[in-house]
Amino acid sequence: MLRVTTAESSPPSAGQVLELAVGDVVHGGWCVCRQNDTGWVIFVRHALPGERVRARITQVTSRFARADAVEIIEPSADRVPAPCRYAGPGRCGGCDWQHATLPAQRLLKAAVVAQQLKRLAGLDLQVTVEAVPGDSGGLGWRTSVSFAVDAAGVVGLHRHRSREVIGVSQCLIAHPLVGETGVLARRWPGVQGIEVDVVPDSGERGVLVSARRRPADLPGLDELAADSVQVGRTPVRGRGYLAHRAAGRDWRVSVGGFWQVHPGAADLLSGAVLAALTPAPGEVALDLYCGAGLFAGVLAERVGPAGAVVAIEGDAAAVRDARHNLREFPWARVHKGDVAAVLGRLGTLRDGADIVVLDPPRTGADRAVVDALCDRLAGRLRRIAYVSCDPATLARDLRLLLDGGWRLDGLRAFDAFPMTHHVECLATLARD
Image (cartoon, rainbow, N blue to C red; front, side):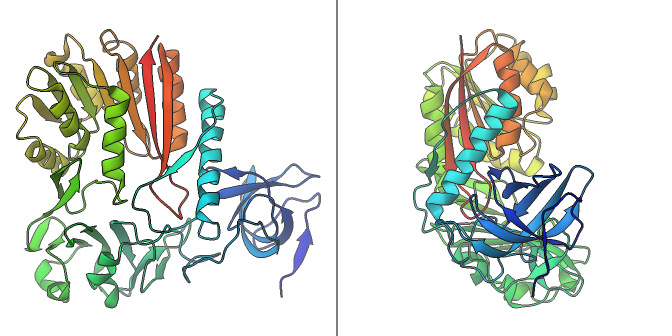
């Protein structure tokens, strides 16, 4: 039985259970509650706006507390039972919103994007989060899953904000092909982590094992139902890459390399980027943080041999993939290195470029890259397409671009990560 304390004047303490009225959603899969008397802010997981809950305090800092909703007193009309038995307080931290309907999840994500744009970029926008084509009820979509392995060799996923591994026999948001590899069917002593990448169109499956031991010392690798098995980057079986299909063609992507994890996202985003940039024959396009070259490839087709595409990526495996994927376009060049550093030394850009797409990691674009788009490269540039999976760093960078003379010409948001708090955005900027 829960021992409940009413939210009074004293600060909360770890382990304490409070009865709370749940307020707005905030970034990271939380809802915010405030103690009336003290002004203490409590961020609560497993709750929905408007609910009344009993929440157990999990952490207290000097400025706020975190908590898990462990009992729902007055549920939201948007609440549903979580489909996964590993979801919930103290369990797997991979999903944030399994307890909400899909339409409600998209409204929550839209509210967070709008909130971050207002707070960090000073933009007051109405945001809609669009479903990704091919979504099947929010489950079975994830084509790349990084599993953790504990000291006993149990495979699973981390508890929220913890390194503790919660063993799982199935992940409901993973594509069924992930489970069919057999990774979850046995223990893996001596292994630190296992990534599984799959291609729904072809059925291809790749497994990348992180381990300190040699492949010959790891039993069970031959039992995996995978086309590619690697320990570190050492091939054990098959080739070290998979062939993904998007924008009407195949793209080579190394196992463990970056590719959109929702089956419909690469097609959707490549089309959205083309619509945002409206590339014309003869133009010069930049693809910054280009990964395996998806955007560079679709841009190269549009600008044609009279134009040029300059792609930059820091990851060596991704650069190899991009160069392979762009080999039919001699006017597209892939440069390896830090994006800001390469931009600074490329003599081919002395006359500038016309359009640019950037798809940085979750930490956002380097400040030097943003500065270059506002200063040295700004002369000819007419449009920017900024693809982001983090609304906070997107809003931060948008503020810098706006201050540098750009204006926001459009923003779209896509539910490319159902059941989680993550959301993919595409911001389009133009010059005044």
